[in-house]
Each structure stands twice: as C-alpha cells, then as structure tokens.
Image (cartoon, rainbow, N blue to C red; front, top):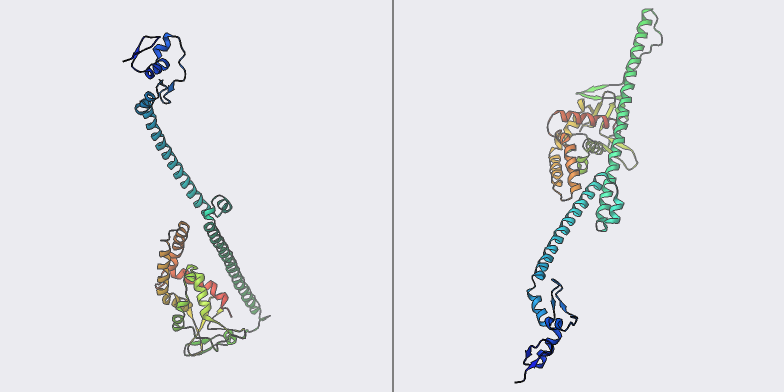
Length: 359
C-alpha cells in the first residue's frame, strides 16, 4: 500500500487527498513553513476559527455561545412584547381619559375627529347631544330668570298698590275728619252671584266655554296617557304643559276656550268649570293637587324607565340619567302624597300657570 508523506512535517497519510488537505489546513505544518493561514472559517457566535467546513458545521450545532444568544433573543422578544403590551395599555388608558374629558366639557371634538377617525360618528352624536342639552339648560335658566324677575316685579307692584290704598284711606280719613269728603267715589263692587256654593266672577263672563270639557277628575283621568316621559323629566314645567293642554281648547276660528282660569294673579285665585257648565271657586288650586294624585301610576312608570336608563353601557348617557334621577327625586315625592315636596311643586306650578290662564 502506497504511503504519502508530508515533505514539511513528515506526517504520513494513506491517501493523496488527505495529504493535500493536511498541507492546506494543518496549522502546525503551516507554521513550520512560515505560511500565512488564509480564509479560516469563523464561528459568528464565539469567533472560533476552523479550516474544515465539516468541523465548522459540527461546532455550530453545539456552540454554547450560540445557544445562549438564542435564549437571549427569546428573552428579548418576550421583554419587547411586555413593553409593547404596557405601551398599548397606557395608550388605551390615555385615549379613554381623553374621551371622558372631552365628553365632560364638550370641547376639542375637532381634535378627536382628526386623530381618531373611527369615533367620528360617535363624537358627532355626543356633540349634538351636549349642544342640545346646553341650549335647553340655558333656555331653562333664562326662563327661570324671567319668572323670578316677573314674580319680584309682581311682589313690588302689589306692595306699592297696598301702600297707595293705605295712603288714600288715610287721606280720606283726614278729609272726613275735617267734615269734607274730597275725591272720594264709591267703587261699584264686582258682580258676584252665589247659587248653591257656585261663585261667578265678573271676569269669567267673557271666557268661552261652549265646547271644552269641564275641569274635573274624569277629565284628568282621560288625559293621563298624554303625560309622557319628556314631560316627567321637565318636572314642574311638564305638569304646567299637561295642565295647559287639558284646560285650553283652540277652535278652528282661532279662538281659545278654557275650563280653568285665574281671576286674581296677586292672590292666586282660580276658578274651574263644572259639569253643569257653571264656574266655581277652586280654593287652594285643588285641581293641581288632583293632577298629582291621578298621575301617580304613570309617574311611577316613568320613574322606573328613568332608573332603567342608568344601566346603559354608554358612560356619558349613564352619568346623564343618574344626574336626572338626583334632580327628579324630590319632584317624584310630590305624587300621591301630601308632603313638603308636594307643596313646593304646587306653588311653583301656580306661579307659572296663573299667567297662562289669567283672565
């Protein structure tokens, strides 16, 4: 068998191919002949050099540095995932916080539309709702201010009237004491006819009452379903609207008939029309109290509807109806029972309805 000997280091090989590989790659042999080691195969993970591809490939399978780096990559990926999740949660919380803030003060909707295109429609609905709510609240405030101004004016006017009457009375007494009655005229009292406890005021003679129904418990009962949820939310103003609809009838020729009238706004004196088509004094605005008693079942139904609306998933709607419950609680206590809340509500309604039904 032929043997092949390396001429540089003397090592013997059985095959020529093995000798050729030795001459090219054996480091100790290359050092003996002072040859540069060129183009070694490097492990990219631990930088170890190899001159045989097979050795290099075998090393890659067991390289500890590679395995450690691979584990580190997994850990890095996991850490990146956690950071991404945390950032996502923070952004989501920030977005929800921005939405709540924007809904609470009704501002910066334009920024929401530009930055968050997928909530354009919802933001538009919220903006419209807030605008209507803002307009209604301001309208109610203006009406309240007008009413307070009117009541204050009426109060001062009444006080001035009483003072003037007192002054005239004193002047009359003074002149009478002198034996001279000056500037004194007898004022013809209003025509009052009393018939079986039915009192007719002169002012009522001009009130049309031919076709309208009488102002009785039966009339209120017939109209009970016209007292809807929106009237209930408006509290005393809703009762005023219900009473106005029930006590007035507009005819085709434009004239208005009524079955309930205020003949003296200063004293809140009301008269109601009976089944006999005669007027009778409604002392203490008894009709308004009867309205509260008869509307109790429908008011309880509207209260349950209001409570049910607080279970909506929409945060803004839930807060809005929760606020409505707070505002409506004392008013709801006025139904079906004589309480302080009933008295307060009746007084508010009288102040409003006497101007509408004044004759």
